[in-house]
Amino acid sequence: MTHDIKTAKKTAEKEMHSGPDTVTSVVRSFAILTALNTKNGSTVLQLSAMTGLPRATAYRILATLVNLGYVERGNENGAFFLTGNVLDLSKGIDGQAWVKDYGKPLISTLASDVVWPVSLTIPRDATMVMRLSSDFESPMIETRFHTGTLLPLLATASGHSYLAFSAPELREELMTASMTDTYNKLRGTPAQLTTFRGALPTILEKGYAFFSGYAHNAGLKRTAAIAVPIMVKKKVVGCLSMRFFATVLNKKVLEEKYVQIFKDAAHSLEAKIG
Image (cartoon, rainbow, N blue to C red):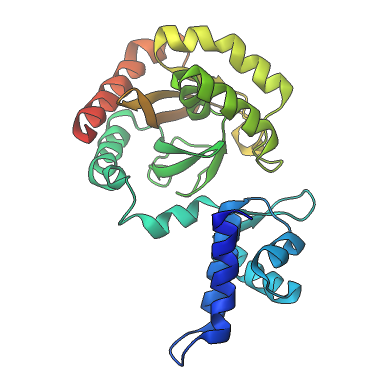
């Protein structure tokens, strides 16, 4: 049994020895969250076994967490997954204070300069998480996403950018995980993997990723995107992206007008993050 699973069990067991100021439902909820953090994509039966909670209790807690937006249910085997909203709970203490301190004003400036929707995403396991965006401010948009939305690695510009500029060994691990360890909506396909491998040399040469054909979302059929990496100490800590209508901007216009803007913005962030 791993350390985190032991922690989940201990958390659930604490309620048996809790004092008058302990709220049992909160203790149980954190036991479920701890277990999902250990094995994201677990079923009710698995979570019940991991935490020691009755199956009916585990299900009620999961239903509540789904309603709150911290957990999402996949279509395969009834498994449950943590959403990007869980990251918001640690904004004040995680190592990503730069997202709020430097990223937020930068996204605001970029959104004003380019009008098209822009976003800042960070990697999480085998997905990308949209931490900041101008989706609800931009009029030039097909589908809007909330912050905290999880995005697939093999079917987004930000995912391609993150993969391309990661160390080769990590890149291979991430590609494998993206096809096996995420639920069906975010899971990569062999065709997407082939497409990425074909695009990899160009991404590395030009310093940005281009992607069109967002098969994971029917609302993005007309949309394409570019993304550049944010590199700190030779590690990709995030990506800056811009979505646009593919029929409006061609690659020549993108490279002449927009790509350098995003590269410069990423470099400014890198300098501030240090």
